[in-house]
Image (cartoon, rainbow, N blue to C red; front, side, top):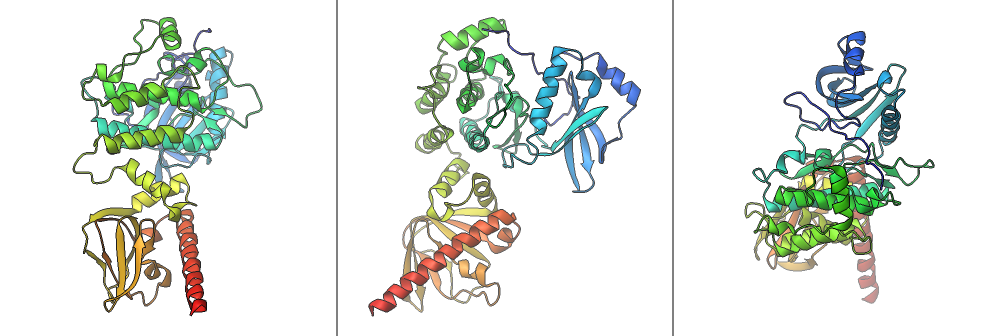
Length: 464
């Protein structure tokens, strides 16, 4: 068992809202030398500096204005004289290159996007999405815990983001509350992929990287790693968010690492009685020391979280449909088969979900067609002058002709629920504002439906 890598804690001015992670402990002596020599930074490349967000041993992070895209960005600057001579400097350089290599690749709504990276003689920098929200660290205290339902939703979104990264051959290796940013109630963004393990990398990966309290037994033992090391680390994060406690308490890193590899932690419910057994089981399985007993895939982890949310009735009564349930519902529908995970999250963003009783009229003949629907559950009937034209079941869409026709888009039939039904409603104006990729997926799905309906009509005509 080897000594763990250097700590990656950094300091930040009061009011900092974005995680500022960097390798190195304390403040590097070159920090102030570089600032004095160069003077106050007003620009980093084409980016206008607005203020400093935080600083670490080898990097400073600034809030900047991107004039070409009219947006605020976070720019992590690494000064050249902080990366030379020492082993720590060499490691930091390697981590910078790893993170910079991901520019434009991990485009997911729950991953901090890297827009640009530049390597220069005096300084190198990475331009990232600016997230106006704090990290999950502040909710890891017993006196500041999130509601259980919000914790489950947050962890669910983390599993989907990390599954997306894994499918691109990326393992994070440093999952912890400080690297997960919270925006809104349960929306998150995972940051700091500097320690990431890339399946496509040809050179040997640096060992001993990570934060000891969140390391998997395989990381500590320096075994070959895959996505299951991130599953373990996220299990620790879930444990801490649920209880306000780390699963293992230790006075030093060596004691911590011994416990991780040899000791079973108490169940989360031993600290917080209202935690249901289902969540105890999920955390325990995510943190299994044996890889064969740990979750094998992110999908298994995600599914159990969504099931626990549904079966344990964790949802806030004011929230009719949880995001985890929405995502799983969309993922299971044939209509959305070709949609990627990021595109499904976009569908959730532009749609409204309604639960309607039987006999509710959704569309009327002659009304303007400014939205279409996908039926998540239940049955609806399509009629024209009280004559039944069709009965639609879960997974089918209706009202899409208004979106496709663009002109003369009045409704040509009535649509009403035949049973209690859940409707996913999407306004055509909102779909117009969606990404090109998302609109393309809808167009392809609608085309498939039209082909299927034409084929069915031809079969009926032939049979006459």
